[in-house]
Length: 396
Image (cartoon, rainbow, N blue to C red; front, side):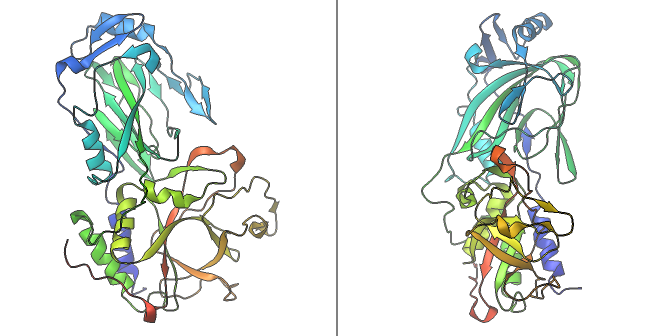
């Protein structure tokens, strides 16, 4: 067993330890639970009658869902109703109720320097037998980092949210803050009407991506200790190379995009990892990993590369070298102690050792991509061990 196995496993466990969502209930002034809509007048969502909810349901349009930037209506996939924001109004306010602060504290570790915008998107009504199969919400821009779904206290049975990510599943109720990169089915409504208000969550870009701080946040202490132990071991990539970390969340991407712009959009444990690496004085960046499927070499790139015309050779697979371009760098898999893991390694490519699993960008028709979710990674650039300096963090 590698001497790095325990610490690498502990780092991965830390980065996967927190669920990618938060949920709970919120005390709201009764006057903020009113709903006004064009064709039916108004109703009090804290004390609505079945007849009022039927009128609201009938006033709504069939709910569509996004596929390739188009709105599609298919009741075999989604059966629900909706009102666009031009057709309703509500005094419910995510700022005065403190809900925007809940989002920041839960999903951004309470980072008050990260400014966010909470933008109302749509009202949905789910009646008996309504459902929404497993899906990922479509990001509206590269700065969108999640969705906020507010569930009003109308009588209903069933309709739980189920979130799935990387083989894990969570069932949640009430108000929910859901990262868009998680897959989300709505279970079937058994009775009554569920009324939800959906908001899109955006980062407001700052001039500086992630500030270099003197010490991590308190909860990041354990991660800092683990990474310091790993990085100060002279047997770690002794000749230098890249240390790769697959990220917990997916991020909005599009063809031709430079993913270094995502430094300012990292969230949750991904942002924690970036903060700790910066505090330790380690140079890092966001990259795309292109796995050459066992052939030599693999590639790291700062760009989403157009591989829509890539040809597949039955004997040799993908000819990556014809598509990577100048911005891509050849890398070869290595163990954490620097041993090359590819028999074809001729020493020309820089070594890449993975601490956590790094997912490869797929070779689909990227010309059609515009703000879809994709996998990127954090890559730390390590000099040879004799020239390596890691900051010792004393105060937390």
